[in-house]
Every structure is written in C-alpha cells, then in structure tokens.
Image (cartoon, rainbow, N blue to C red; front, top):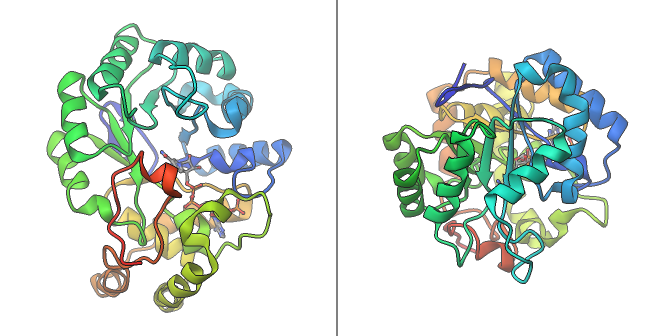
Length: 317
Ligand SMILES: NC(=O)c1ccc[n+]([C@@H]2O[C@H](COP(=O)([O-])OP(=O)(O)OC[C@H]3O[C@@H](n4cnc5c(N)ncnc54)[C@H](OP(=O)(O)O)[C@@H]3O)[C@@H](O)[C@H]2O)c1
C-alpha cells in the first residue's frame, strides 16, 4: 500500500470532480453507486475540492461515504479566492470549517491548497493549514500545482503530506524538477488527470457544457495532432490485451505515484482499477515515452487564466 506520510492509501485513489457535471452531466444516484463500488473494489482514497460544483461534490461524498468513513482517506482542497481573482479572500480556517459542514464530518484526512495564491505567500497558507492539523481538524497538509521552489518553502514551514499535480503521458512536465523535489523531501505525489481528462482513455467530448471545450488540448487541431500519438498507446494495449485507459494508468503507476482517475460509471471504474494488474515491460515504457516526450503535446493544458496559476508545462504548439 502506498504511503503518503502517515496516510495509507490504495494504489489508485478515486477523483470525484466529474461527479459534479464538469465533464458531461452526472447523476447523483448513479454517482453514489459508483462511489460504493469503488469502496468494494478496495479504493480507500477519495479526492474532492470545495470548488467542484460549488460545494456539491463535498456534500455528495459526505453523504455517499458516511457509512464507511472510518476506513477511508478523504482529501479536499481550497483556494483563497473561490470565485476568481476578485472574490473575497477565504482563510484556510474558514475553508476547512465550511468543508467539514458540507461533508458532515468532524475531520478531513488531507487538505490541500488547491492553487498557490498570486498575492498570499505559500508560507502563510501552509502555516495556517499546519495549525489546523495540529488542532486535529485535518490529518495532513497538501499543496496542488506548486513549483519546486514553492514546495521547498511550504515544506520548510510545515511538513507536507502530499503534492497533487497533473501527471500523465501527455503531461510530463513534473518530471524535470517537481517529482525529484518531492522525492528528496519525502512528500507523497498524487497524480491528477492521469487519463489526460479522458483523452488517454478514448473518451469523447460531446456535451456542450463540458468544460474540456475550453481547454486548448481539446480544440479540433490539437485533438487531431495528439490522436496520432495515441495510436502508440493502442499498439501497446493490443500487445498486452488491455485497453488504452489501462495502459495510460499503468504507465503512471510505473512511476510509483498515486493516480486518482475519475469516472461517473462503474464499468469504467472497474476497467481503470484493473490497470493495477498490468506490468509494463521496459520496451513498452520506452516506446510510450519516446512518442509522448516532454513538450511534444499539442496545446496548453489550461486556458490562459488557468495557466497563470500553475507551473508552465513545456509545449511545442
Ligand atoms: N488538483 C487539481 O487542480 C485537479 C485538477 C483536475 C482534476 N483533479 C482531480 O483529479 C481527478 C481525476 O482527474 P480528471 O477527472 O480531470 O481526469 P482523468 O481522470 O484523467 O479523466 C477523467 C475522464 O476520463 C473518462 N474516463 C475515465 N475512465 C474511463 C474509461 N475507462 N474509459 C473511457 N473514459 C474514461 C471520464 O469520463 P466518464 O465519467 O464518462 O467515465 C472523464 O471524462 C479529478 O476527479 C479530481 O479529483 C485535480
């Protein structure tokens, strides 16, 4: 079982963002069945955030997971300015209190700073989260999408349990500086969007309200260019009798980090979990990494306003 400091988590966690209709419409009853199936499969690590569905996601998880609460590791995240740059500043304490209320829990296992605020030093944010851990309101302090320098500064202020950042075959920028830094400091690494927001599992973007329409990598030209490279995943998948989503997750698992793929549906969940049994040989890993070399994905990973809040991924497009 991977270990995020004192938190024992399953090899894969479950990312709940899509249960708040971010990537196409979600239905709470179906989502609840999917969450319960995740527990049955052996998943104990659930990821949400205050911003997913403006609180809907935390409320849904609080309800669906309450019966098994004690055996689970539940993580959430907050930003100081929830409604965008002009929103009033929210303190970590206010954020944690509001999350606890939505969950109807008295404790959150891991609480992240979702984005480093452009005006509040990371030491201040993490120092406040550290106080909440010392008081027993949260079990670990995390940061998401911090740079190597910010991670060092944060960890010197209060020992971090985990960094959560985007990491998948088509988003490998963390390998340069960020992964080596968390390994050196003994901080756990949680890989979000391990399926490339569905692209690396062959998911189609159909719903007009799907947020991926705003992402440069999901514009038609980028899809066309990146799809050609996806054929290499298909080739490896055919060789191993797996599907491409499983190969994409197996590649992330081969890096000894904890992926948190998201899905609304039980069949996808079961398929993703089965990636735990796939052993990628060195030749397949080399073939995949050659085609998905750092900086070769066409299109930035966020729209312009989102890009200002994350370390820059090298890009050729
Ligand atoms: N820290 C951050 O800033 C941040 C940012 C983004 C995400 N996250 C976290 O990371 C989690 C996962 O990331 P993500 O949801 O962005 O992307 P992801 O896990 O890479 O991909 C999710 C997408 O893939 C589809 N999918 C999943 N399994 C599939 C399968 N077996 N076959 C076909 N399609 C499949 C899902 O659609 P279906 O529902 O149709 O299966 C969904 O559209 C989130 O839920 C969230 O908790 C964190």
